[in-house]
Image (tube, rainbow, N blue to C red; front, side):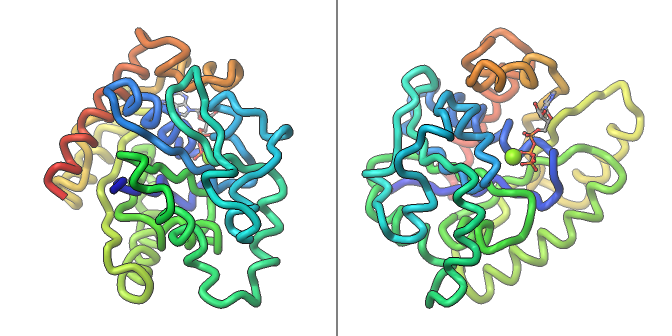
Length: 256
Ligand code: ATP
Ligand code: MG
């Protein structure tokens, strides 16, 4: 059975998608079978895995509306070494279309149950909101990975996310845990970042991953080639950090 993780933070542009595709590629590299689910209508994780969101015949939208199964809607990204359940603009409509549906927050969970024996990891890239889409991700997952930049306001946003996760845990998904906080776009030369990083460790202890992802331009360039950095330039510092993070995740799930 696959371990299912949401990559979530309601703050925009914090590195969720970069983390999702690079962790997926890093896990594939160390021999894990991975399904990446794009739950964001922006479709960045889809494009960033070399799948053209404009050409999708079926997507996560069809899965949420139960007009297709994941087995029908997924694609394999040959270059990246993992499967992709893609998303595009159409997904923005799902929120409204599911309004009157009972147990609408469990659609993804039910669909994943049919394929999860085929994978070691399922990674879900969430949109920058605490919407019905994110809720579907949180209901389906065993844990949440929270990428964050070590900036002053980062801690403030974390409170809302932690409260949402607690509510989902209490009411909808008792399996749900915060697996950890991942420091991304980290620049140790910036004193404030080091201070916030120390605060995070003091506050959250071993919930802070040991791996730290540096700010690295190769990670930002990779999506324009339709590749995760880990595949685009394996030697880049950022790529190596994501492979180390993949190894850390493999270790963590052994004790889950
Ligand atoms: P959104 O909330 O819009 O979904 P996001 O949280 O998924 O955004 P990303 O798209 O992953 O964030 O990253 C935001 C921007 O920062 C992108 O341009 C990405 O290439 C860049 N970026 C992410 N991580 C790094 C890094 N470690 N070093 C340099 N640039 C990075
Ligand atoms: Mg994103």
